[in-house]
Length: 402
Ligand SMILES: *[C@@H]1O[C@H](CO)[C@@H](O)[C@H](O)[C@H]1NC(C)=O
Ligand SMILES: *[C@@H]1O[C@H](CO)[C@@H](O)[C@H](O)[C@H]1NC(C)=O
Ligand SMILES: *[C@@H]1O[C@H](CO)[C@@H](O)[C@H](O)[C@H]1NC(C)=O
Ligand SMILES: *[C@@H]1O[C@H](CO)[C@@H](O)[C@H](O)[C@H]1NC(C)=O
Ligand SMILES: *[C@@H]1O[C@H](CO)[C@@H](O)[C@H](O)[C@H]1NC(C)=O
Ligand SMILES: *[C@@H]1O[C@H](CO)[C@@H](O)[C@H](O)[C@H]1NC(C)=O
Ligand SMILES: *[C@@H]1O[C@H](CO)[C@@H](O)[C@H](O)[C@H]1NC(C)=O
Ligand SMILES: *[C@@H]1O[C@H](CO)[C@@H](O)[C@H](O)[C@H]1NC(C)=O
Ligand SMILES: *[C@@H]1O[C@H](CO)[C@@H](O)[C@H](O)[C@H]1NC(C)=O
Ligand SMILES: *[C@@H]1O[C@H](CO)[C@@H](O)[C@H](O)[C@H]1NC(C)=O
Image (cartoon, rainbow, N blue to C red; front, side):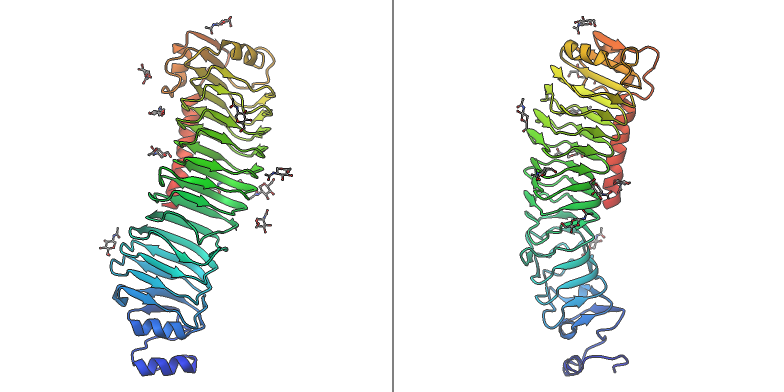
């Protein structure tokens, strides 16, 4: 019956039940019954992958001696399982995948601290996790999509490659001790009241944050790649320690924000602030000196000041529905025809009714009643392009994780 080595206790248990079809060392252990779960529970380590099949029943518990699954743990396209638990399991070496498991309402892994990755999607009945405190603290990648979770308590990883939290409609609080992240952090389309709090975050490679009501990252000092905030509901944005953004920085369509403040001195890519309709004063970038890409600022501004700006490698396009003529007077001095701190084409436009909704550079030039332009540098690389690039970049991130 047993062709491979197996712990005697397991053999005895297996034989007693009389249905064991696997050993702890199989490449893939497929759980199809309660007795399979008991056999798995008696292993200390499962060296391969564990798959929970649809035949396993509505309650699957493999608590026992099992502390480690070296491979992956997978439940997929399973509309029968309601409860999955293992109180002894500490480590999953591979991916912990739960995908399209629509009735799962209890997920209990109270000793689990380390997983290779978390890949959870379409868990329509999962409202909370029964994990330890702090729970999972080590993972390379975490993707949690389309669940009913209202918090992510039980997952608290400090350093990882990627994290994507999207379409969790009941998620209202996400507080994480995340310290650094080397790939992409995406938070999008979760609960309308989502408060995102990252008190220990020091550096992050890239982040795209949408639809959050509060955002806080008091210690964030560096964004190595790009950071974008689109369609959020926060009223103020402050990153009090953020001095460098290696790639692009963008805020698009955050309809309630009235104050964006950060001590950033350099932005490696484009600097985009567009269609944040409540933002009338843009003066929260007192230290910004260098922008490696294009500066694109369009909105209902009364005043825009960037007092330290001294090096813009791309175009500069500032346009407002209001009168910003005194702001424009200051920026004119940096234009290619004057101080030449701005290397690309230059536009500064007041009273442009389409400042928020017009995404073509031609519109900028024609509709303002008082525009200052550098005719020598046509606006070929104007706003439409940058806006598109930004949207494409965001779409790219989302695609990667869906
Ligand atoms: C989800 O799982 C159910 C079985 O529970 C299956 O019928 C359905 O096709 C799956 N959906 C997708 C999108 O794979
Ligand atoms: C990332 O954060 C972890 C946890 O705080 C820390 O141990 C590690 O040194 C950090 N890595 C870098 C490169 O900053
Ligand atoms: C990001 O920048 C920080 C601070 O400059 C640095 O410590 C970290 O190693 C950088 N991370 C990556 C992935 O480049
Ligand atoms: C969520 O953000 C996206 C942009 O990433 C936006 O298209 C969408 O309309 C937002 N949803 C809501 C409900 O605000
Ligand atoms: C902000 O940065 C300074 C200097 O790097 C550091 O001493 C301070 O602790 C940081 N503040 C926070 C809230 O992390
Ligand atoms: C994120 O940022 C880094 C810079 O730290 C960059 O090299 C990388 O291409 C960016 N994108 C992804 C998907 O990681
Ligand atoms: C904007 O926010 C910053 C930081 O929170 C604060 O210091 C500043 O006074 C605010 N500005 C306005 C006009 O409210
Ligand atoms: C138009 O531009 C001129 C010269 O730059 C300036 O004096 C005037 O205040 C501007 N008017 C408006 C409404 O922006
Ligand atoms: C932009 O919005 C204004 C005010 O709502 C409207 O009158 C105008 O037609 C819009 N323009 C475009 C190009 O959508
Ligand atoms: C600008 O933001 C408003 C919401 O504040 C939205 O209705 C509108 O579609 C946005 N315009 C563009 C061009 O994205």
